Image 1 (cartoon, rainbow, N blue to C red):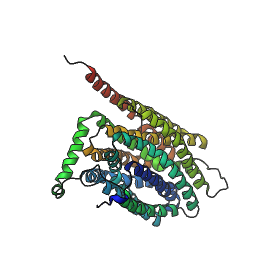
Image 2: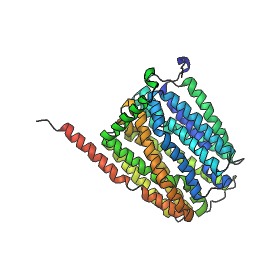
Image 3: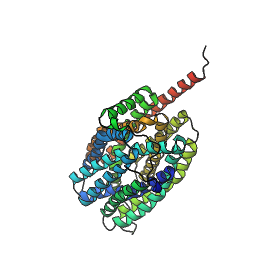
Image 4: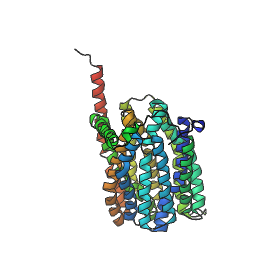
Length: 420
């Protein structure tokens, strides 16, 4: 894709703007999408999870091929294509409210995500370097919160007119974003494969094999993949069913401002976004010059907090206890994501970075796809039991963090032991 350097933005600033716009569009398209599926489409707990499973199957099939594509051809091109495909999926979801179109739109969303997954962060690291990229990963959450708050306010207003309206408008926004990136997104730090290598699939397979070899040779990456699998297994049931859990188990108080469900779900997201401003700053300070071992212990603490929140959420006797637990869960996960990203990028070589990150995304998808339908089946019988199942699935990650710290201790001991 030809680039006119006259209009290109600084990569660091563009990444922050891009993440802000994605939070804004995500608020429109995803913020109340589960309420839309529950009310307008009438999906059961199992159907809600199956829609999520369609997303994960799509990610499973396309995560690695699109990651390799980004490493072989262009990370910039991959990101732009991803936003177009996501927009198509969201537009279908908003226009045609049936179970089968929900499945198809979710699959398109997953395909678009795989074009972006890994490619965005790999592009940024190549353009600005690892140190500046880590600052951008954490700072982008704060920028995202600001844009997300605006998006949530607009979503609540539009949803009280029609639940599908913010989804449709957000879908159009993805198309506009893709056009913007064509004009302003630079790509100076990436060198594509020579044209003679693009004529065959050998370049794709070679890059994939290098990525798999990197995973096999580096224990931290192996631990990261297993942890990703478990996180996926735990998150799927919670992500697809927490909205229905609150609607089914508890009575949402009326407040005299439009639809009570729209008000409460919007209030939950707004409160979470404001809380993230402070917590992301804390995470950024903790990450500054942190060793790999310290990063792993931070993840251990965050994951332990997440596990406590999930257990409390499943056993919550009142709406207010459930809301406190919900905040603990959502904030823990939001803090963990950029820390995971930084830990992974520290252990991956540039030429296979997008591919390895895509393999991690595939592990997460396998976990969600493998365990999600089972949690949904449980939810058809008892939505509270489904929440308990999600809580139990996250616990096996904790010993894996301990094992990862022991590896780094062993490496440091070898490095400091004088040779005889």
